[in-house]
Length: 400
Image (cartoon, rainbow, N blue to C red):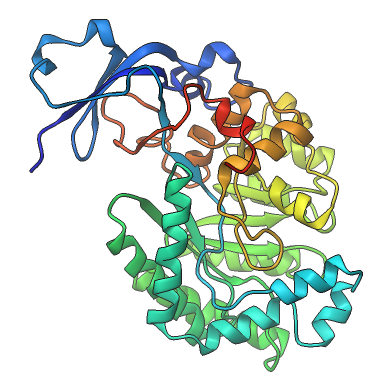
């Protein structure tokens, strides 16, 4: 087993100590826990000590060192808490047509849209999905991501949904340098073929029990929105998931206000995600709850849609996270720092709010905040050494 190691003379270390103390709400610059000329001691699993380089305890003085020469900042590993990582094919042609003026309905009628991805994912082998997933994880890692959620949802039948989740398990085993979390999203849309009631029963009576029994996912998500799952349908799925021991999450209030954010808060969901159309009542419900509001500004940017009311959510006292929403149709990027740039420009988030949104708060959205999202003794040693001297350069250097 490798010996513990010392990172020394970091230009700055941002521990997030104050963010953690405030549970990620209404954070300020003082909450970043900034240590200038910092040092960090870690082994393969955990952080052992963090502080100023000049105060390194004698017991660690003889350990191997990496001298960062005051040129590199160290932060908690970024947490990308909402992605659709495992799918086959792409929708580049759809994107080009949409940019050229074609409507979603026109593209869908020609076999494009989500059904194009469903068809390709159904046809792909597990090995093909695994290989593409590994390449994507490498890309995310290069951008500082150390924890990432992977949703299913491009199968929309029992066989393919289970296949995608099995691939997720293989990816978790293969990338020991990352923490990967699988979420079951069979309720992403309704497939062609079975009736609405038949597919809903397939999720409730077959898919969810198998996911829980085989531990293929730790959470269940539902797309509750206009034209997709109703609040009643979503509640049935989420309550069944909870009864089977799964955590729950909601794609909420993206296309229209359905008060699904309030439903997420009521059910104790880990997160309510998207929130472009969230109501004042939904914002208030999230602020009162432990449910994290996950914003996906890259998707709004990609679709040229109005952004979620991030400032209102933060000012109300909600815990707010930011994620890529990596997917083939509405946000084809794993560059979380670039999404931070969009958030800084269009949501008006401060440096502290951006930091919290992709560290501690994003860890909360996955139920991992007890050991991820901050730098402190006992926390997981999944820090990121930036190629920059300051955290703000991470999003100042757009799409670096």
